[in-house]
Every structure is written in structure tokens, then in C-alpha cells.
Image (cartoon, rainbow, N blue to C red; front, side, top):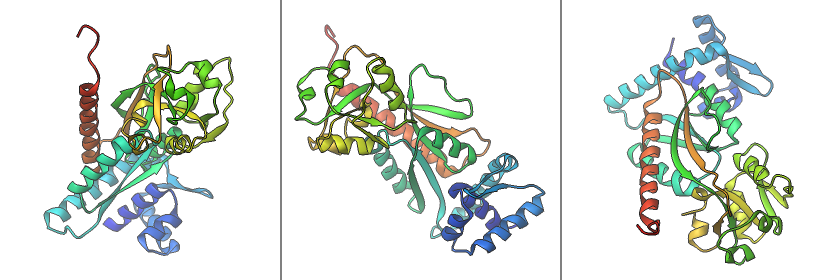
Length: 312
């Protein structure tokens, strides 16, 4: 058994395709496939399920994945101890639903890269169900997802709350809604509404909020970032967690603003999730710690800027 075989199987798992793994590793696909099959024969198990849509970890492969990751992590530490800093450490992959991408994710990646200059961070936008599936398959190290307070937490993951906020209406500063202290359901029905596609938590929330009134979306988009850009262009209003809008460059430059939803007490949580495993790569653990530390700093800054309660 060679270390390269384990690195190859990790690449196939991460990328979900023998072809894409071969391209990244600069191997021919037949050579990569034969190497993986040699490892499977040596271990006596099928590590991959090969489908026309791609290759994913088999049930046996998922059981062995923590051990494969542990070996590769140990090799990384050995290389670092030997002073081979020129070697590229394995990639850390983060799946995100795009909530808080700029206010949280960008500072986190910047700080992590300063401490891990040879580790590549790949950020992949996806829906929550896809993030959960890829985490279980070992393709993502970490996942950022929205969670409505009161919903059940999935048992397959370690979940860490990063930010706690509330849904708000994101509007252009010239919108009639921007002149209001809060926005009602009736107000929302009177403007073009930009909705998140089915599969996003905010899509489900808006349908629940407007129950019995529609909703009738003028537009539907894939993620918060495109929704905010459409608002900035004056196409309509969208509903997002406040932590996805506050501190965004579009808000800082005055292209978008937000208002609370009248009478709504819903809380939205930004959760950081990772698969429950005995062995977690050191780089993934370090990135997890940076996420938690940065989120705490943002929360403290928000508490400091919040005006005192009446009588306080």
C-alpha cells in the first residue's frame, strides 16, 4: 500500500468523479482507476460506488474513510516536521449556502490562509441537502447552513452555532419599503419578491410567513448573494437572515438596506457542521476553530453596537 493510493481515493471522494480527480492529479483516468482498483483488491473491499453520474464512497469506504484521513493527516504532519513546507497540503473544502459569505466567511478564510499558506481552501456553493450529503460522503470537510430555530438537528453531524439572527427584508434604499420602520406581510405582497429556490431554508420560511397569501415570486434565484445583487439593481425585495446583509459590501456602499418583519419572532441560526468521525484532518480542525472564534468576535461587536434597552 502506498500513500499515493490513499491520496488518490481521497481526491476521488472529494471531487465525486474519477475524471475530475485524474485532471487535478494530472494522471490519465485509466491509470487512476487501476490504482484505485489495486487498493480495493489489497483491502478486499469496494471503496467506491461507480455510477454514470460519478464516483462516490461506498458504505465500506465511508467506514474506512476516517482511517484514510488519519493516515494522510499523519503524513502531512511528518512532512511538516521534516521541513517540507514547499509541498502542498491537502485541500480543505467548505460547502456553504452563501449565508454570511462576506461578513463571516471572507475574514475566516483570510485568517486561516495567513496561518496555513500552503493549504488550499475551496468554497463550494450548494443547497443544504447537497451539503449534508457531501459531508457524509467525505467530499466536504465543513458545511455552513441556515437552520430555523426549533427545527430538529440532524444526528449525523457535529453542529456548532456560529451566528443567531432574524429574517429581514432586504431592499434597495429607494424602495418604498425602505422608508418604513418595519415591513408587514401586506407590504411584501405589494412589491416584486425575489425568492430563494426550493431547497433553501429561506424559501421554506417565506412560504410559511406568507401562508394563505401566495407567495407569488417575481424572481427566483440560487442563493443569497445573487438575491442581494438583484435587490441592488432595483429588481425587487428579498428575505434573508440579517447576518447575511449586515456588513455586506453592498450594504456598506449603500446599494442595499434591510428592515425587520413586523410581528415576526423567528430566529435563524447559521450552523457550522462536520461529519461525526474519529479522525478529522488537522487543517479542517484549525479552520473550524477560526470559524468559531471569528463568529464570537462578530457577535460581541454586534452586541456592543446594539443600543441599550429602555431603562438600561
